[in-house]
Amino acid sequence: MTARFQHRGMDGRTVVVTGGTRGIGRATVEAVADAGAHVVSCARDADALDDLAESVRDAGGAITTQRADVRDEFDAERLLETAAREGGAVDAVVANAGVYHGDAGETPIDRESYAAYDDAMRTNARGVFATFHEARPHLADDARLLALSGGVAREARAGFGAYAVSKAAAEAVVRQFAADTDWLAAVVDPGAVATDLTGGRGTDPERAADLVLWAARDADPDRLDGSVLDRRAMREG
Image 1: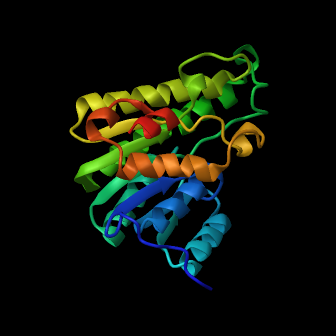
Image 2: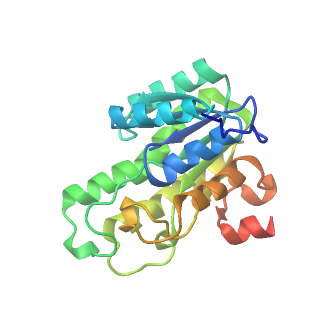
Image 3: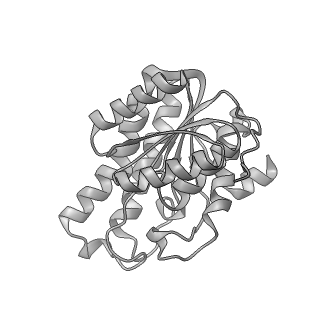
């Protein structure tokens, strides 16, 4: 099989991507490996991680996978320790793991169960905090902390309930890391992407991954820190 990985601009870097087996996460893992980085990725499904690793390695990329649940800070700690052990200082962290309970756009906040609300907050917001927090001892000085989000975090739309609330909280976590630490931190908003979370509606995950790669590698640091990076920002950048 001819390797598709061309080592464009991220040789020698280590990038952590959570929730890497599906949708934007998988496309991001492939894009970052394509750019030459050693990717360290996690998910809750061990079989799906094995499939991801085999696919990336067959195509010539470098990847380490580890089963982890970002709701568990000890899992996050072990993931980042593995990343540092396998690849040295971590150059970028992409907090992508997320959940949506129900059908996209059909979960009004007044009908959410406490269980669904709590799990959305624990995964989508606390999971970002845990991932970034446990990354700290292993980050390169110029590391970038990125979290995936969307417009519902900033402008309410009917039917997105706890998911929208959790994404707003996740964006607040990112802004606070930008304010309180020396590392660059930003939200990446690719718009509606065709994944399980959106019911298959939106653009291809590969386009979203291009935006994540740009944010991790090319975005102007002065514009990146504490901001929301979308496709318009990439065009202007």
